[in-house]
Length: 90
Image (cartoon, rainbow, N blue to C red):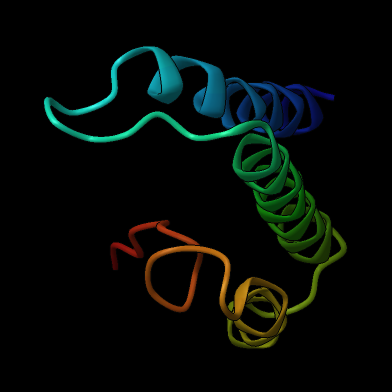
């Protein structure tokens, strides 16, 4: 149950990011319009879903290589790097 709560918390934090980032736009940077904000929201939700699927994959006993390969597919074009911004430390 503990791992599930961590995943839910991580997803909630990812979903809150556009609101926080929008309030602290860089100096000279134009704030996002409504359509751009909606795209950011959809992208964050997609990233959260991809990470949740990866967590469930690992919890299901599948190997890290297999789960991260699917994460890379799910995150393609969404985030930074192949794992949607997640640092892989080993």
